[in-house]
Length: 252
Image (cartoon, rainbow, N blue to C red; front, side, top):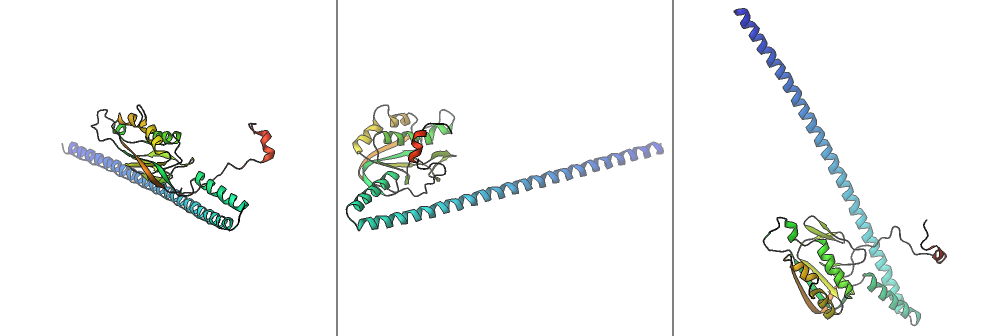
């Protein structure tokens, strides 16, 4: 009987030894995986930080470039103002180009559009159905353009042909900057025409109203729309040379 009891004790010891070994291996594996995950996370954060720093440096460089070009333009304008004839015409052309490019503050009559997210009860189950999206803002801006708006801003950002308006989460990015509702769109032009274009039956305001998006349109006798504050960089487009006119449309 003692021999059987001794065998049983040895079996228990053996089982405990095996369990202890397996537990030690498991803990070591968990620790190694955890260290690997921490290392991967750290590397990813470092990479994202480097990308962010690069973007900040690029933005600062473009802003400095814009400031330099603006300074040169002011110098040309001052020189042109001191002469007559050709220089007067040149100054007028420069002023016109500034208006077209959005590089100068403008003022005039127009409309103000204020857009707020819907406060209606959610009956679709999708909260996004009741929020203002980039497509809603573009619909209003495109309608204003079609109605002859000469200058447009969104939350103080001048809208140019190169301006991006896109959803980034619960906010909208405009010219690289993020904004949340309410969204304020200002447009300079014939205020009666702009107002009628937005508020006509089955127009953009009516469509947004179906989702209970709050849109208020007001006519103004005088609005001030700021100039474009970013930098314009052309990486691929360049003025076409006269001798290239005959090759227009040909594949390269």
